[in-house]
Length: 269
Image 1 (cartoon, rainbow, N blue to C red):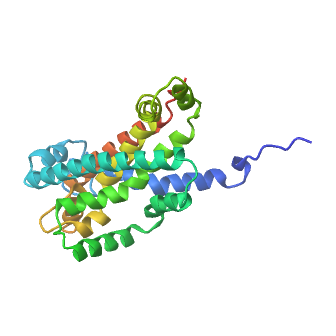
Image 2 (cartoon, rainbow, N blue to C red; image 1 turned 60 degrees about the horizontal axis):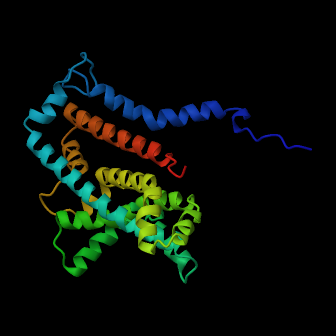
Image 3 (cartoon, rainbow, N blue to C red; image 1 turned 120 degrees about the vertical axis):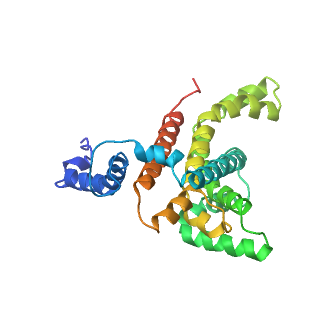
């Protein structure tokens, strides 16, 4: 007797619960986006559509502070995601293609551990570590912390991509007298490219949006865009903060979307 397919949508209340979750998750983002185009100085009174607060971000009295914070954020995100993706690629190659070895399971657990540990714990531990070894807090400490934190985010899509690649490609290349280095650079690496790009974009957006770890390990006078926004919000929410938040949200959405479609690319055919 054939079993009927399990359809969760048939349960009573599924649609209402789904709608409630979507509203809770995305309604605040939609409100911030809409009011970033508000002509009023008030964040609650609507006076019509305007781009004045986006202009204010780039030419207003606080523009220099936000430009420097944005520059710091993007530089740190680019460097951190590049290094973390390189490390994650090597780790995935060793774990997935390295065969059975001692502590293989432990290695996977250690790489994935930052995803399960509360970020506040990671931030405090990182701060204590930097103080213990005597590194002065600044851009370098933010960069090092972001590299460590982004490695598992880069590792997951790369490892998933590698697990989906049959080793017959590598065996065929070795049968044709290719060296291990040639097999990796000319066969495996191109096939892994969608996973590597996806991991890079994901780690980039994680670094760009990070606030908790950055706020703990940054030095005095050093700001990234999330910490600059937090500092401005403590003095009161202004419409230009909504404009900055909307632009940061747009960058995040674009990066996540690209990462999703790249990860779906199949170049093994």
